[in-house]
Image (tube, rainbow, N blue to C red; front, top):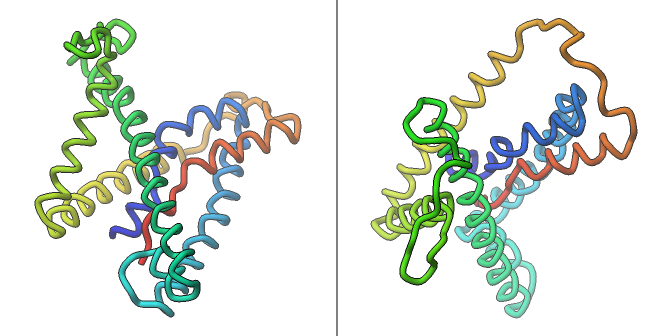
Length: 207
């Protein structure tokens, strides 16, 4: 469940509209092609995890084959990558969560929400405050125990998979083709759509 949750990145929720805007109806093919790439990545990690059954993910794989210097660098690279990915996910979560609350008339529109005045940063957007709070909350969950973080990961994964299943099921009904005019008329647009959609996958943690 942890591996599945790690593979489903935040990009599929926040970049789907952008990929569809660039590639048009070809976005379906774009995501299918990126799914093939993701499958190869997942299979590679699965093979490594089966042959090197040790905790540590990519760091453990490198440490098993290369000297200590390379494994040390790999560990720090993973640490920085996780830090940047966590910040990206938090910043992607906050504005979309505010938009969800606005849909149900719980808060004003995100562009109408004023900044939060703090002693150090006087004009801090509410989305940044919410993102920072989400990061602190997840840090607290991970600090409690491994079991607590595993349970939280399971809950989040179930929620993400449920959202994706509902989204795909609702969009799988036949639609008039006139609602899907061809837009990706050049290779550059299609390749750009592929690159945007590729960001929606994340193979951060395996093994």
